[in-house]
Amino acid sequence: MELKRVVVTGLGALTPIGNNIQEYWNGLANGKSGSAPITYYNTEKFKTKFACEIKNFNTSDFFDRKEVRRLDKFAQYALVASDEAIADSKIDLDTVDKYRVGVIWGAGIGGLETFQNEVMNYANGDGTPRFNPFFIPKMIADIAPGNISIKHGFMGPNYTTVSACASSANAIIDALNQIRMGYSDIIVTGGSEAAVTEAGMGGFNAMHALSTRNDNPETASRPFDATRDGFVLGEGSGALILEDLDHAKARGAKIYAEVIGGGLSSDAHHMTAPHPDGKGVIVVMKNCLRNAGIHPEDVDAINTHGTSTPLGDVAELKAIKEVFGEHAKNININSTKSMTGHLLGAAGAIEAIASILAMQHSLVPPTINHETQDENIDPELNLTLNKAQKREVKVALSNTFGFGGHNACIALKTFED
Image (cartoon, rainbow, N blue to C red):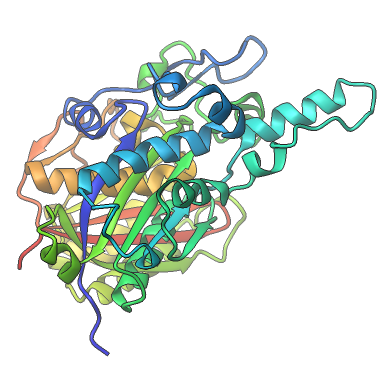
């Protein structure tokens, strides 16, 4: 069976450094930090008092009051980003075969704010179970693609992938395979997350996973820096329209890039910590290269998982050196989480988009906030530190890993007919 070629024909983003694709790219290219003191609740008693929140987002610009009551933030973010991507793709919603258009979405947690608020309301009450009738349908992680599908009438495959921080990368790989096999013509894919809540921040603080650089939050996300002390929690959404190449060409669609492969693996090591030698990461990148039909020396850029944690950053770079050998020194390696923070289940989507935009603009976004060389990191690796670098990017990898040892890697290529 000959596999279909799969291309990207639409993009949408709602991020801590920009509320649409153009703003997002401007933030990436200029090394903008999205980290700032939390505005959603009183942080006085919390260890970490900052995050990468969405800014200047007014729900009334997108939803009426009834919709707001029925949609958790993570679903709102999903609808906004997917609407931008659908509009960008110029799909004719009146003529497209909606039985062959699906939605495969990623979310690591789902409606955390809804869950938190409903449980707290119950706990603070008189014991009578007075729950909002929208509690469950607002909270469940699969409701985001459900809402996208309902809004547009897409009747193809519809589900959510949940693999912690690898969730939306898994969704993109599933979408790739769905189209490759000829089951669908178009998949709306990506991910969303909205975990900047008391429960979210408190839970990650309890694990000692978050940075506590409260005196200077703008510089707290500092992947690969010797003084890094944990990740910065972010929120938002990224959406991509994946499409069968023949279908895209037949309708004269604009093509951003080709998705040429995806790899998956497991660390099988620890609930939250990466394997110290990056064994699962080595496997996932090799699987991705093999699936894409490319060689290590073909890769120009890697958007790393790079969360700014002491163990994870070192393990990932060890794995890159193992897989790419001497060629690793020729690759532009970066971490856009230095700007956006860690969007958990949405990370894979916004970072795949960052890789595509780097191809489009021949510019690799920087890893900002780097000040001190880590003695455990090879200084000859080009980590694209502090300033964007001009570079023709023909092939890029995007790495995303999740608690539980879930690893995903996406291979993207500039489109050539």
